[in-house]
Image (cartoon, rainbow, N blue to C red; front, side, top):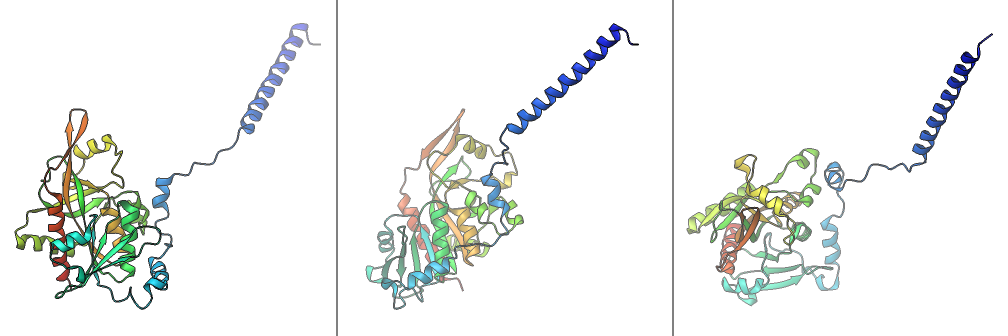
Amino acid sequence: MPTCSRLDHVTSLKHGVARFAQATICILILFLSQPVHADEFKVLDAYTRYASSPAVNNPSDYIGWLKQQPQFQGGKLDNLPTRAIVLHYVDVRKMLNGLGYGDAEIEEISIGHTDSNVLFIVRPKSGRGFIVNRGMPGAGGISTQIAELGALGVTYAIHIGTAGLLGSQLPYASLIVSSGSYKDGAAFLLSSSAEEAAEQIAYPDAGLSDAIEQQLTRAGVTHARGLGFTSPVYYFQKAGLLKALLGFRFDPDKAPGFVEMEQASFFVTSRLSNVKSASIVAGSDRAVPTGDIVKQEFFDGDMDRFLALALRHAILTLSEQP
């Protein structure tokens, strides 16, 4: 027969097991009563995860609808020039006039339904006709424009705009023919495969870019080749990012020399639209590292002159393409 001390030990052991069981149940109840959260949706991951899935919103559908509207019936959007320039400048007609194209040679057509997308159809007295599309900023603007130009039959296109230079790598008062641009989010979103989504740089058509450079060289125009970094915004850019680009710690041959807003998405959308494309920019400002801050300096020369120069030679280059 067990002694009192042994009975006390058994009773204590039973109570300890019971308390442990109660604690375990409480922990389980507490855990199970908490809401179960699924993994958060990661937007930037999703941009590339579905690269191989089919695309929707074909620009040809919009152009087909547009041609049925009263103002475009009768073939107004048919048989347009197959060469185009997307020019980021407000008064396109003024610049064309300055290059010698009269108002009688220029037809202005607004094809935007919810935005101010304007085409200047130029049919000169001699030489090949071309389109100048007044540029809209950022990925949404440029990707819409080049997709619709492709749907209208354009096969060659040159983008012309301004850029912020990074450090002293590239000079002011010089046209810069882009050799490619680091992608913005839209360019990643537009990828057609996992392999393309993994690439960090979007490239122009090499043949058209070379043709621009050859045209500038023959004319004795000061120019350079440069790699860009596409930022889809101008205001509120991050100083930390600019400092990282200025102090590029990766392959020095892939250090960007300027920041602009459209090139990467322009190049990718051009490929999707079967358009051979290139880009010319001119430096309008410069990011300069100054201690712990990045200082922005502005070019005090005539930017209009350089944009007009780029337009002149873009027209000549496109006229020579087969």
